[in-house]
Image (cartoon, rainbow, N blue to C red; front, top):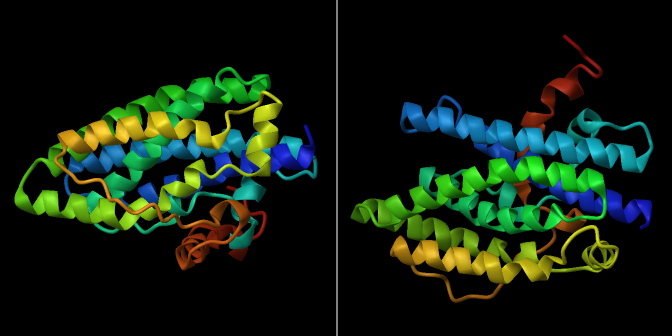
Length: 251
């Protein structure tokens, strides 16, 4: 396995967890109820912890002396390899939950498959992260159902969120040369192979939530190759401010 290929693949895992974790953390102190404030903060912490593991391993593989902190705080937007879905703004509470659910439903089968990776380091990270993400999916799916099948207003907002985010989901299953190389080496599943299980989960939950699955197959692409929406740059400006303003600061 070429070092550059493995490095790029690890960035995809780490950057998606990091960006989504930061997005979720933005709710801290602003959630609609205290219980959700604590729950979302814990989900964000889980995601940041996963980002640390993936980016830490990426730094080792790269072999240029960069660790998790350098990769998180000293790269520009075009160097990030996260899914476009993860960087989309929080919007209202319904949009945040729908974004979380769509990604959780993808992460569960991915991490389950990665437990069998021929790379013991990848398998170990997947085993630890898998337990957290299984809880995340249970929680986000339950809330999507409760709000989708709740009041007229909550149903409207959840359908609106689904319609707005759906076109960003296709990127998760668009296999490219990196996915093919990782799959052929027995290190990771091919991205396209995860879609059937993901869609089965999505359809079951949305049916119970009385939400309508969008019919469009259009998919926004670019995040995995460094072409992002304008939202990522704004997010990184806030996330990276302290390290950029005071390089190398410790406390």
